[in-house]
Amino acid sequence: MNSASAAQPKNSKTASSATHASGDKRFKMLDATIKRYQYQQDALIEILHKAQELFGYLETDVLIYVAQSLKLPPSRVYGVATFYHLFSLAPSGAHSCVICTGTACYVKGAQAILTELEKSDNIRAGETTPDGQVSLLTARCLGACGIAPAVVFDGAVLGNQTAESVHEWIHHCTAESTKEG
Image (cartoon, rainbow, N blue to C red; front, top):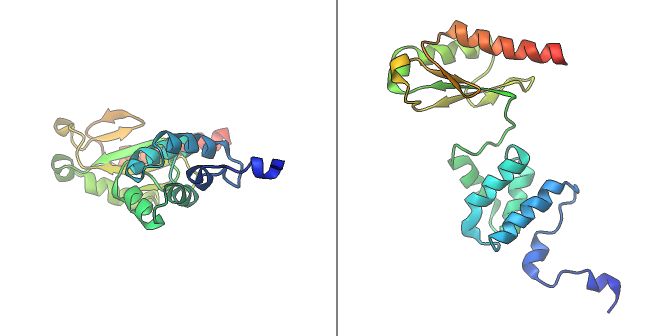
C-alpha cells in the first residue's frame, strides 16, 4: 500500500467533509461538530448554530459546505437559515440597535423611529451601516411596554426613545469608528 492511498479516508462520510480549500481552521472546528452529530441531517439547526458561532454569520460558502457535508440540498440548508431569525446571513455590526415593534412601542412611535432612520442614516431594519459599525434590528416585543418606545443599544434597554435619540446614538457609534480608524 503506497502512502498516497494510505492517506485516503476509509469512511465515505469523513470524505464528504474534507478540509475546506481555503485552509480556514474554522471549517475544521465545524467538521468536529458535524462529526459529533454523526453527519445526521436532523442536526442541521445545531450545526448551523455552531457555524454562526465560528464565522459570526452564515455566508453562502458556509451554507454550501454544511449542505455537502450533510448530503442535503443547499435549498434546504438556506431555507432553515432564513426561516429562523436567530441566524444571520450578513455580518453583524460592532454595535447593535434593536427597536421594539410590539403594540405599545408601535403606538408610541417605533415605526416613526424606523422611518426616520431610513431617511437620515440610510439604514433599514436587518441591515448594517456601510462602515460595519451598527446593525439595526427589530423585535416583536421586548416586554418593556411601560417605557415604550423601547430600544436596546448594545444590550442596554432604554425607554421613551425618539428618532432623534436613536439617530444620535448611531451617529456616536459611527463617529467613534472614524476616530479609531
